[in-house]
Image (cartoon, rainbow, N blue to C red; front, top):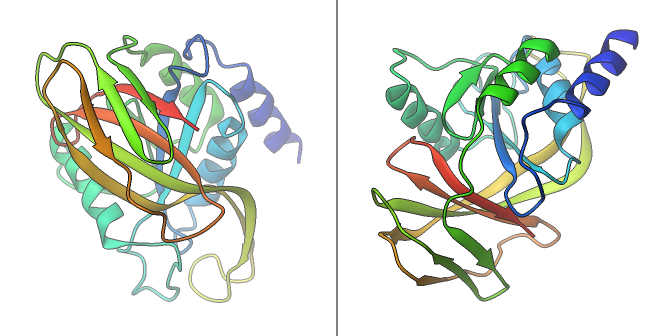
Length: 225
């Protein structure tokens, strides 16, 4: 308990994050319930999830599903996204846990101090103006390269899952900001543009939007509802 509280305190006070909720730092965790190394990273990212200047997203990947326990949140799309990052960051493989900050840098995320240090070093410019409502996403500004506009829907609640098999058998793992939907709205090439927002498949989810340069590239703007 002392180690968990220390990690939470350190990450809640981490410097170098965005100045306000209008330009949150995007922190993506790739993890699986079947991975015994993932719970410490889950704890660290969960500690950041309620910061207004952070958009913390937890993506459950599929490649642990055949090793004793199937993660009910995992989707092939999320594994594909992690591979996009692997290629962009010049990695030969993917692994869990992996935390990616603003699409620019990555770390395992199991230790709070190195994670807080990398967050402080991985800032970004405020980028284009980005906003959304229930019907559409609006973006304006200039773009050096085309950017993909993503809409993400995630569960902001703390969800405890009892694991009955695999490496984490017998443990109950806390989840927060688990991603349920990741939708490519289209390409933005500068100036003002608007993208329609599709209806949600699941009620009660929170929504955020971000713009990402290239495939697995830097996140240049983000906002949350």
